[in-house]
Length: 385
Image (cartoon, rainbow, N blue to C red; front, side):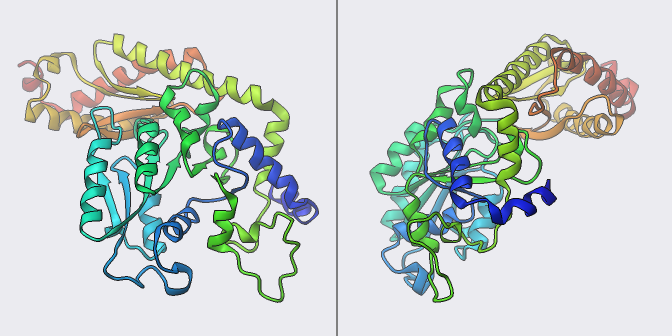
């Protein structure tokens, strides 16, 4: 694929790659944008440039030391936000971590109070990051409410839809996902829920001129037609690989409707897995959202003692070892998450080869291996109590 991409990169007009971005925007309910390009890092300087009352491109982010630029996101936000504030010169202390509700969604009331407090302190709130499909549980923030708040305070609203953004194209997803159409910018990763090979990231913006204002420079050795789409003006990269090729080839193969069916199937299978887990006597279902299900193994004789400190410590250790055994065993693959302070198993379905029989097999496999681990970790006397 890289050989093919390098062969055709210089022969494909930017307008052809621009068409791929248009298609992605259309699938996301014509959300933000006219231009697509890789990475979320470019969106942070754009938001800062828009909100600050000084010339950030010329004087940097510390020209006005009395006004600290502030970024807002929930504790469920992916770690890219820390890298972005670090590399962008804001520092990770610029992040305000907003509490979440019982469903791991950003608490908008807390967000409002924090923005008001920072404004009163003389800081410059400029960016709110909403999540459309969190890493741990697939949670979707209340995007419409966050959008309304950003408009009220004149802030940039970015949605991290790297995993869950494409679910906006299917009716099976919850309504909050479709709220990403209200964002100023969106990030989506075709290498996640469009099943593309690594790596293929895309940033969509509502107004492409905002990116030009943040990134474009025209030295005398650049002889560009101002009417053409030149991606050098839309992000930090001057030389870009043809990442869009693998996405385009897959789109030509399965079509938009094929993608909608596969994504909808993944959501349906995740819900079926959650139902099967909830019926099993030794498994505790924690969450299910989009195509992510979280759960843990709980021996039957410990069910009545849940929330006891000793029991919870044992269950965390048990499930931590269980994840490792399952990954090494090869029958199924699950990862881990922390949900409500508990160590749990995480099954994320983003593989179009997954079947109903696969998800129905998960509970018995987990319970069988979980029993083995419990026997090794817990003394016989404890199991008999």
